Image 1 (cartoon, helix red, strand yellow):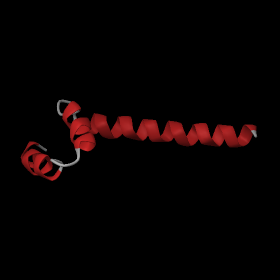
Image 2 (cartoon, rainbow, N blue to C red):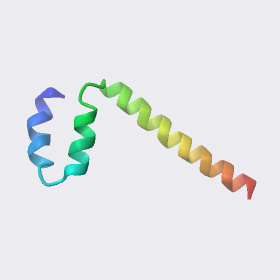
Image 3 (cartoon, rainbow, N blue to C red):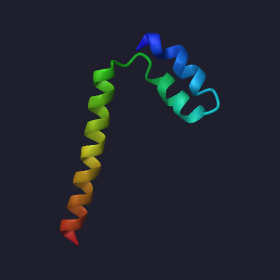
Length: 55
């Protein structure tokens, strides 16, 4: 991941939102980022399913 940092910085130079979000997670292990993203997405799907079932 560290080897990709210069390429990411160059590619995101004109896009501050992804750049800032990625910079905030530089110290977080990639597996933790994936697990957190999965948990967040699963929670949204389940929330939507619960809302649909309650309707």
